[in-house]
Image (cartoon, rainbow, N blue to C red; front, side, top):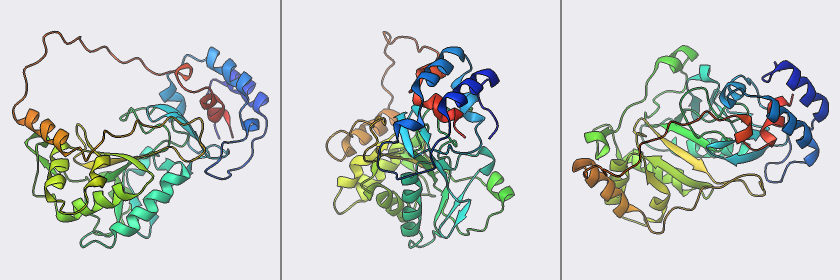
Length: 313
């Protein structure tokens, strides 16, 4: 693969790292021999490039044992696999972004969820949006998260066909399912959307699903059975063209930082409060501090293993 680090620094790091092992199992810590931490610290100390440029330049996953390092918004992924552009019950969208990479657990999740969804009326499967870059890390545009190979966006648009061309996948748009700035669902929302999200949340590997607050309230009101799965459905800004699934750290991934558990209960009252605040906004807090501009992440901000992942063949 072409260098994604400065040439001199990359040469130093590659020489120190040597040859790495091929992909291995998904549930055990990677061999320490795959990461030369002295070399990683050296490259970190000599690189001032924004991390998003370095990770955004990587075109393929690293030849390392699959492993997640750091958190969803401050991490990277070794040994990521690429979701096939088209499968029996899914299609990856916006292929030009090269963001259909993830930890193998995430790919397994997408395959199994799409097979379940394909049994619903009107859904041939799933249109899959952004996952992660080939080696994770910060993205050149868009998401602050999706860095560790454990996030995936699922389009709200029910697939009618799964033979879209690359050009169609670049130009087709999803549908919005919200109205009144997210306080309610609109006419694009169907009972099948409820079932898709329920199936998505029911997998024990899922720790969060982000969707606009009106959808959460709608599902809370419509669900007539066990509502425990709704605990994982969390209202968040936007998320009306797609919903965002976040998996927990795979078992044995000691370098992976998990999301905090959701608050107890089904979260329906909190979602209703959010909707109430959309419809009748509270007055602004005059003592609220002014927002600070976010600083670009560098390699020094990420787990040290991320430098070795960038330099791996």
